Amino acid sequence: RGRPRPARGGGGGWGGGGVGAALVHNPGYAELAALCALLGGAMQLALAPALGFVMNFVPHPVISGFTSAGGLIIAMSQLEHLTGIPIRKDRLQVTIPPPVPPPRPVLLLIATNP
Image: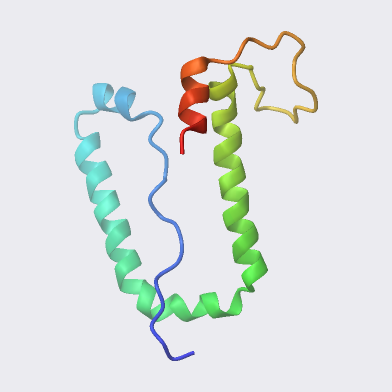
């Protein structure tokens, strides 16, 4: 209980989908984004020692489920690009659409390479 533990939690992936368009319309966006990233990192460094004990109250199955769900979300988001099958993201997809394109050999080679 009294041992030092590594800091847990996310923090980096706050999006960045519109960065290119924002830089075109607002040249000061890059400086504001960098400042926001630095302030967020500073807050994490400052508050981790003080509030890290809160993670002791979160059960391990909850942490494991959260991590597994994150992995599933990432894997499902890449499935469309790997297989070439269009996947709708606005509703639950129960079945695979009938016209399945042939697998891409280069991607299969990358996916199966150890």
